[in-house]
Image 1: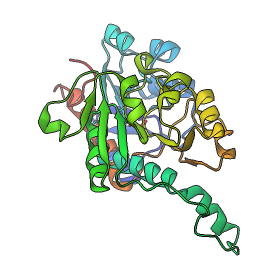
Image 2 (image 1 turned 180 degrees about the vertical axis):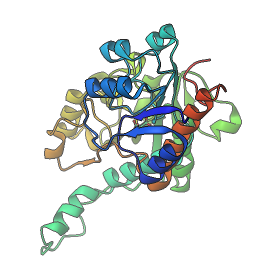
Image 3 (image 1 turned 135 degrees about the vertical axis):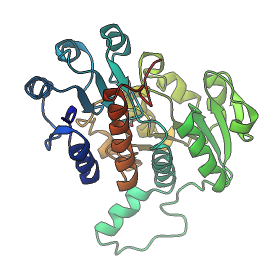
Length: 321
Ligand code: DGY
């Protein structure tokens, strides 16, 4: 008998195929199924494992009603701000995430946002789609050169460091803030600021790679945005909760910020569409890890965690030990 699994959200075909081969798997193909329906499926299927994503928060009433037969909940994400860790621990549920496998693609997305915001990608694309048909003077529609600029990185974990490596290739100078300074081999010449507010005035571009949650909620707000030099660029491929969106809209409208590149928002998918009205914002719908290779790797990693736990082995990526 194969172990019983509910896959709460649609997954790439390769991941679904492996889930079917190794488990008695109920795999959903609707990304919007409400938590009550998932609970009902877990009960009916007598599931021992749940495969889920950040669109299904593991907390509150959903967590309380989770059938006791479920031994492991494997989140197909690196972030875990959608999980009430203390409550899961208290309940004795094993919870895992999928670190490492999405580092490169998320860092690539941050670079895409940096380049697109600095080089006015959204405006150029809109001009072309409108038929172009007008001449520009040499001083029209100019962007910002990234080489030689100072890139501030808030959060120098795996993804922040991968962004730093890429940005060095573009000739950028790296500054960073995190709760602790990295050892020299990981710092690779980046300049550490123990105080975020002390770093901000030196950032031509600021890119966010800190985790979501209470400690970082709205860490980028009217006060911290005002500390950036006039004409700076903000990029967020981490979590929408890091940014006070009213303050960001004001800074973009006033011209204090030259532009922003945003992959994440406070409310997803119902993001604040006032961002879409601004020409100096490049927008993507939370797609940092969205490549065939990475989504397959994330799905496989979540399945590896489930297989380990249901076979009586320790999880590979436990959220706590
Ligand atoms: C992650 O893996 O945390 C991505 O942001 C998707 O939620």
